[in-house]
Image (cartoon, rainbow, N blue to C red; front, top):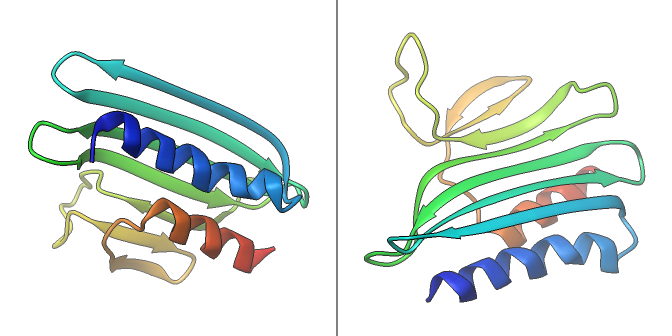
Length: 124
């Protein structure tokens, strides 16, 4: 999959929120960089006031690799519903890829964007 195909798949998944009437507003930014890299940023405010924030830094040198990512879903007051990320923590976690929820932090692979959108829809 090329970097352009990957970016198009992300856009399609996010646009489903608008197509289904769940999005109040969508801000979507993408930047393709030298070395087959891209930065993706999106903020989607949903009709109930909740917000999905997407941040990805990907490289397509040997296939799509998510070097850094965070997908945060929060309610209208900014209270965390869930977040997937691979950020380093202090103290260090036993796992790089994980999911935060009000119940704690668990090992979790990054979801496919379509699955992430489905998870958000499930909370509406």
